[in-house]
Length: 387
Ligand code: MN
Image (cartoon, rainbow, N blue to C red; front, side):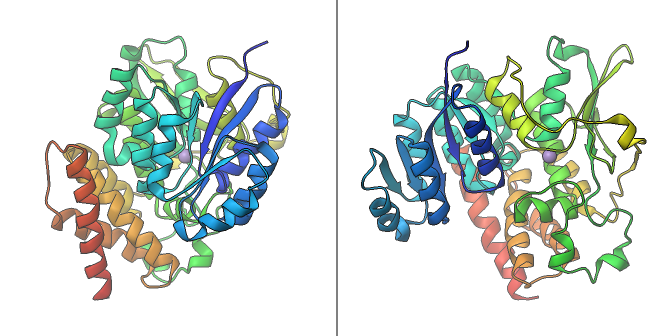
């Protein structure tokens, strides 16, 4: 019997956070929830806190502090407010594992604090590596911290690499479902709506990542994420469209052998794996039946139509703060698209404009990245106000 894992869930009311709590609920003898945090969703956060009785709860929206505090007054739970508190709690919690499941750039500072406090990172916030991959991976080395990917593709690659020498990797092949607009032309995409973009064929996820999947920005970010997680060169990372999402990704080794990790598309599996690695613990998840699936197909990604994928390769090759610029521009663009301020194809256009406009810094430190993020959001906002 293994010791109980003490876990902090940053972003507990989102899609990954609630699935992580399903795992905790199914494994009460193996998991203790120490920290829960949410941006805005007080009702669900309060309900989760009452069920899991963590030591610390953070509501990022400071205006909602009193609501959460009052609701939990009968419990022995410390309540904090403000996004800064999420990072601060990393210094006082006894959690050993931190699941970073918040959305976008907001994951950066808490992840840094968690690494400095020697917590294992179950990384569900790919933007952190997109923005600051070099900084995060060197901090992990310095503090001897494991960075275990929760992204299904990277979990697949990670699982394929267990027992292997990283120097024997020829390339990794990231699979992409292609999203709801696979096969569409630019012309057809010019008129798609928010509702169309939010209908993902295989995965049930939050709004931000669902739009990123529709534009292939998500796959582009995953390419950058793979570079940092596995120490790869840009030309070693390939994307192939695989609409069934059964093969979660593959690794090709120097002898020509290819390993693939497969399963039904369900994020609970990579979350579960990250919590218990290096052990495998049994789950009640639905199993795959090959005779029902019958065929697995593959096609090339259309980097021309889905320009964001090309932009991600460009940002990765350029290095410095370029991926940070791309991420900030994209967060503003997606938010604007979700508020009907810009059209679908304008997301990539805005990203590209920001990449050429914001000052490039070849070797950014954390302060540079924070400033790049701010500057990009301002410039993106100016572009949008002219649309
Ligand atoms: Mn993914």
